[in-house]
Image (cartoon, rainbow, N blue to C red):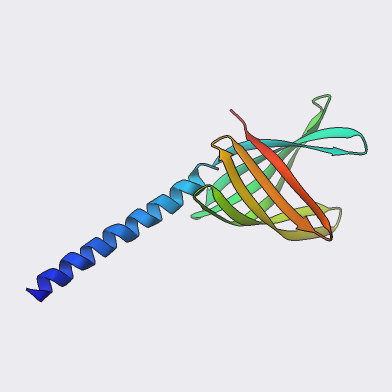
Length: 137
């Protein structure tokens, strides 16, 4: 009788574990695809297109394209975020930023407001910012 009870409990634990893994995977999957945000620097506005991808079961985000207000731009492929963790619309990541030969890595907080609006907040060297990313359709 106890063996049957233990088997039932074990089966229930396995089902709960698989369901939990599936739910966590769904949180990250909503990010998969292309996103765009805008930046303003020295009075000029420019736009950056990013793409979230599953690479070897790990969610990563890449910079794809940078353009200005005149729609002139160029491809720019680099890793923008890794170690992305999402749960119930909130998460964190390691945000990577390259400027010339210098590379910066800092913590970012992610908040999914809707399935097509993502807030990316970060703070480094006394500078804080929240970017609003919109999913490209």
